[in-house]
Length: 226
Image (cartoon, rainbow, N blue to C red; front, side, top):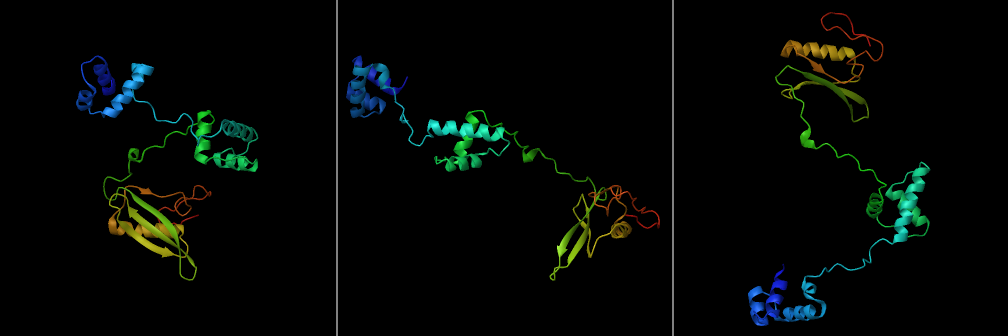
């Protein structure tokens, strides 16, 4: 029960004067007079706070526009055309109708059950960062393109220890080949020891299985085939 109701009931029962009720409940005398008048004409329930929300919203999308938005969605979808809010807004303008914002169109479509909610994206904190537990457990290798000042393209081959993120080797070539990968790998093993595993992409300089060849054997002197 609100304090306004309690104050008016005490006044009506004669337990408090308007002045006493105003002091006791922190309500102005003028407002108490208004509430008393309302209670006498409309009943005690009428003294409860009334919503200030307007009965009509001048900014609300007209029913005719909402219906046309839904019709356009259904028609465009049936024809196999794009039926997103931007496209619907364009069609409304072509018909000489006022097009609400795309967010309003999306809300109308959602309320009509014409939008299937997308599954929530996996939160970033659920991903586990891959990292080797110890040095030389895994080496990663990849190469990137880098243009020189004269526009000449170069390819930079990198070898990285996955645990420490230490850059084991970084050198540029006009074009990275399988021989470059093998030779730099063997050179690094002489300096840092042999890693337990390597991690690369499926480029032909790293694996020949997708082009019908075979990889070089780093334990022999056979040339690489690719």
